[in-house]
Length: 112
Image (cartoon, rainbow, N blue to C red; front, side):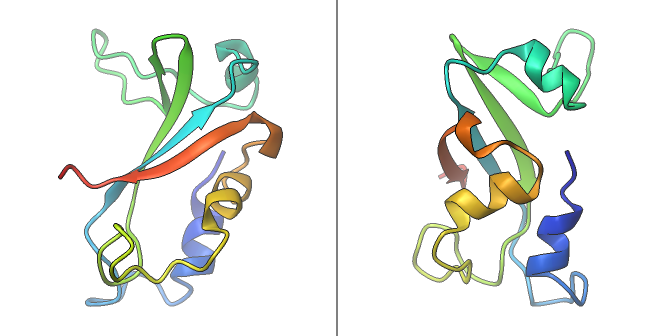
């Protein structure tokens, strides 16, 4: 899994001052069929607070959530000013390497 395609698409000129927001947490909830073993085969690492491992995903009850801190285009991500195009919910998980059939839901978390 790589976030490089995300940066290449949304920030082709790099993170130029004023062109991006602060980093928000992108949460990608995976379907119940996805296991940790499947993600490990893709190179993803489980977040482990006890060992202080900042991983790619966490367990939320019986569901797996991939969590990424990413900048967005200038403006809020709550729909009032973001510049991500229609369809980003399907586009971003696929561009970072997640199989579309694995994705249950995608949401930006702003901490508000």
